[in-house]
Image (cartoon, rainbow, N blue to C red; front, top):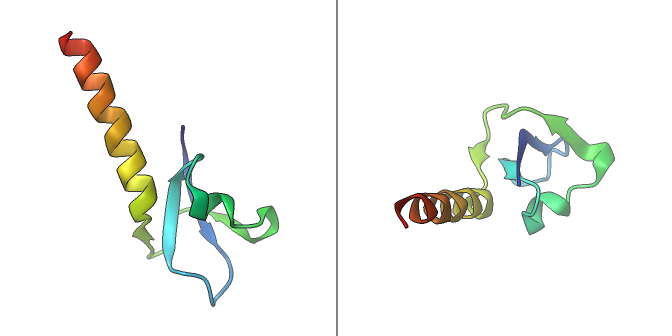
Length: 64
């Protein structure tokens, strides 16, 4: 499920933001380290793949 973008507040964390609630890397970020927004971070590749696959399934359902 798509959520508002967030990233880790830790300086040692990978500088990516997450947009998918089912992303394993995003789920590993503790609640107290989550910061809302993108803040000069790259999109998380796992979130991008999940969002893209959901959009592909939605488009296929509409065509059927």
